[in-house]
Image (tube, rainbow over all chains, first blue to last red; front, side, top):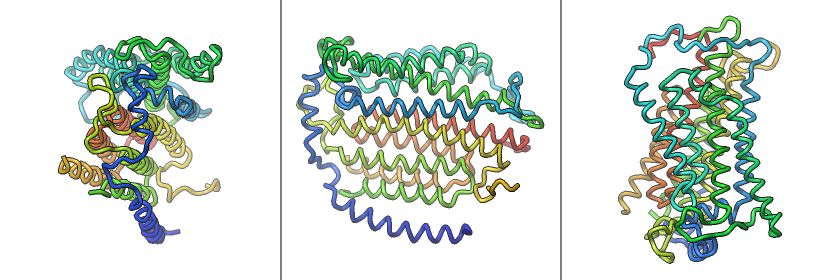
Amino acid sequence: MTPTLRRRVFLAAAVVAAALLLWGLTGLPPFGVYEGPYGDVLNQVAVAERKATNVVASVTFDYRGVDTLGEEFILFAAVIGVAILLRARRDEREEPPDEDAADRRAPGTSNAVRVLGLALVGPVVLFGVYVVTHGHLTPGGGFQGGVVLATGALLVYLSGEYVTLRRVSPEVLLDSAESVGAAGYVLVGLLGVAAGATFLANVLPLGQPGALLSAGTIPLINLAVGLEVAGGFILLLSEFLEQTLVIRRPGEVT
Amino acid sequence: MRLLPYLVAAWLLLVGLYGIVTSRNLVHAITCLSVAQSSTYILLLSVGFERGGTAPIFLDVPVGTRAVDPVVGALTLTDIVVGATVSALLLALAVQAHKHHGTLDPERFRSEQD
Amino acid sequence: MIVLEVAVFLLVAAAGTAVALTRDPLNQAIVASFYGLVLGIMFLVFQAPDVALSQITVGAVALPLMILLALAKVRALEGGRGDDR
């Protein structure tokens, strides 16, 4: 199928799809009018039932905790997939990292970038830990905080070299952090079973809304998810960097 | 105005699909896929929006103030992070495809005869 | 705030179209980062700060980063063309 023919067939199909979408979307209530009962009911009862002031977090990790467990395992599986796909193949070998490209004409990393990167690593990691631990109080949680923590590792690479990143986050540490995070979620769920309730029931003491130690199992799950997402993203970053800087085929130039 | 966010979501879906269909580079197609995915986030959040409502965080506002729907926010925020990880998996596949075929252009992929 | 909402929606539609119509993947990564930021602002207008935080960290930082890393590896495999970039 030639590209022009493909484009024409797609445009014809897109017109039909657009007509169907338009017909379906005009049946929705107008934008800004919320009719469904779930949101209003949850906003009324969630703080009193779970003592977590962030209702979105209590929905994610408590009311619909099994969905989030499934999503976390999608993330886990995707990171494993990347690690498998980007391993060194038979005709490739690992060499010491070559930081500068052979044909590079731009200047190297300037000292201002290095200093700023190093200075920002501490605040970024602290902010990431804050977002993870306060997920049940203010906007945030394990997913967002985990990505912020991974950004801290990226700053380490930008202000140093690849070997610096390797030394700060060795493979063993990343693998174990990710596995502990993924298993931790399931273990917290089994805690509910062990206490006689259902899987992922909120069985720990609930405390007062607004306190840091409140909302039962939600802070624990936040920590587990934060560990897993941070480990996963740093692993992704180091896998791609390893492919570019370390693994070489014969006849390949950086 | 009553339909604008839904129209934006439908437009982004079709534009993303157009980008994938007419793509000459696998990495370009993966980025267009993420645009098409973001249309679903827009649709979800605009279904749950309530005009005059605030964010569903009750740390400093009393319980009972009108707030937007928290369920769609919960669905969307995990979706965003997981979608990025799956895009990383697709990028790794694209890199390995380049090693095998020597090009990222899907038009020039042939079967195993070359 | 109707004007703000309409402006943000139109900006999102324009940025999304720009991402799909930019053919060169390196330029597209930068435009995708801008699109992620604009989407984050739109989620803030939607009164969903959790989602906005998620989108800004992922869509403006993590995803363009991985696209750039994949492009760097592909460029290395192609023998390091002598671009002026």
